[in-house]
Amino acid sequence: MKEKRQMDMTSTLKSQDTEEFIDLHFYRPMGYRWALLFARLGVHPNTVTIASMFIGIAAGVCFSFTNIWINIVGMALLVWANTYDSADGQLARMTKRTSAFGRILDGFCGDVWFVAIYAAICFRLMPEWGWWIWLLAAVTGFCHSQQAAMADYYRNAHLFFLKGEQGSELSDSQALYEDFKRKKDESFIARMSAYIYYNYTKGQEARAKQFVRLMRVLRRLYPAAISDTFRAAFRAKSLPLMKYANMLSFNTRVIALFISLLINIPWLYFVFELTVLNVMFIYMISTHEHFSRQFAYELENTTND
Image (cartoon, rainbow, N blue to C red):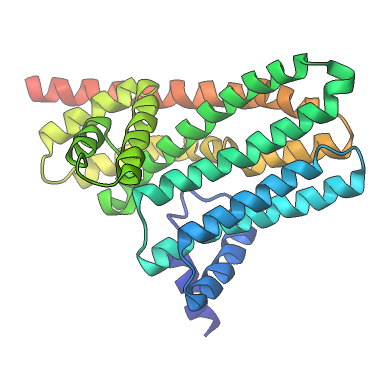
């Protein structure tokens, strides 16, 4: 029975390749239990996502206080919010309710968490820093958004070569734009979601030009299905970067946030994002673009020969 339950939980994961230790051993099991409960109650995945947003905002509010115990309550709330963030995706896969809108909403709610956290830190530090802390937070927030977007993109690229199109949310901006144009007679929310998704993907592709080039070469050479040999070769190059994609997502940055709050130097969190995480970000992109360029060049030359 225990083995069957574990297999069921595993089926709600995207892949072992793209999961990190804390997620596999804490957030995913907790999320799975929430997902089972919500499935029995008939709760929609998007409802869980919205609930996680409000819990994350409450966590941020707690970080505006200098009282360490209020900060610890905020940390517990943020962990709770992230178990819901895990649960919504697991519930969506469990109940076959995955959607582009759900993915957009999930990303938006995660952004709201950190906007609340950044604002809380700014209010906390204004007596010492003045309005300059808001400028530091704005620059850090921009870097955060770019880091998270590319981590998401590269994880989905890896999943595409690991599990195929059905097991990945890797998107193409041109196809998304065509989809947006086809929705001209649909509801405002449907059109807005399609346009936001298109712009989000276009921004990701702007930083992954060599990978986009590689995908176009592959679609031309393998219109039906990409060869298993190439899939394996790509995954071998991509897998080492998944640890950086994970560190640029939630757990590593939240550990840094918690430490900065516990030692009462919250601005240190901004410095960590601007230095350590940006170095990881630049390395991840440059490495991925390098091997994507090599693959594209080799395939193009093979075709020409």
